[in-house]
Length: 389
Image (cartoon, rainbow, N blue to C red; front, side):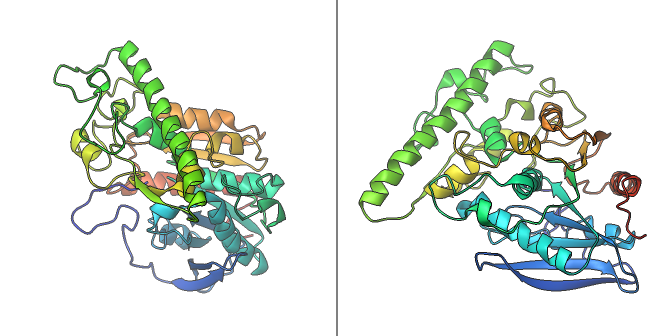
């Protein structure tokens, strides 16, 4: 998930590229098990030997200069920031392949002698980390939703020792569906719509009628299912024509009622989206969440029916300690989503912590970031996973 803010050219993920004294940043060219080239960056103190390595990866966003990398390395951890093969290429994302990309990073750390490896699933990386760890502990996925490789039951997936879920949603299919505009009546015409489901109708008032919200939510799921049915039919047509895959556009994908009605799922957030306060403009924008995709990619990452990457069922299969951390002013990750993810977990050792007033990437919030780093360092230390012996 992306977030704007902080001025032109400033990335909320890459908030600084300056290194603290004594910290090295080394580029690591890695190779996934299926041969895909993976670029990673390792942050660590030059004159120490960290025993615990932390891993950051998002399915499509570059985390090479993640805001947490240098500060955590400065505290004595090794921090591996991996870019998947689909970095900057959301339209073609296949979640099952990204599992192999993350495995390349974890495998490198194990082979390099780190005693403990901890996955930090930030933003869209949360559901990815849950998927990876669930498969590492007991693989069940034999193919993508269309029957293509990889077979994760035959892959080398070294398990991590703990899992941190930081400001993360329930999964790409789940977050897209909660943002879908159900008023769309023609997927080829973004201007056509059902006025009865129009979130931006002139006579629609906040707080929204709860009956309207219930109907709206049901219609969002129905739209996701309609697209999935169309994708499956289109795949059959493409196969008959000797074509492997096709691209298509999903219009109007920033229409979660919670963006405007803060009494729904109350938190400290301001009305609006990651892209600013004008929700209607974000919804109709030419670019947006899931705007461009392919038939294969839709089923792997966006389909409620077909995607295998939802956080909740995967977390239910994880046994290692879990720490869930969430800022209460996040404009796209809401309290009910966080509780659903946390309550799905079944391991004996799990904790949920809220960061009051914290935004999605804590942009311009150094004190909030420090709270997160202090919490993470303490939590790992209590479990024998501190930076050093």
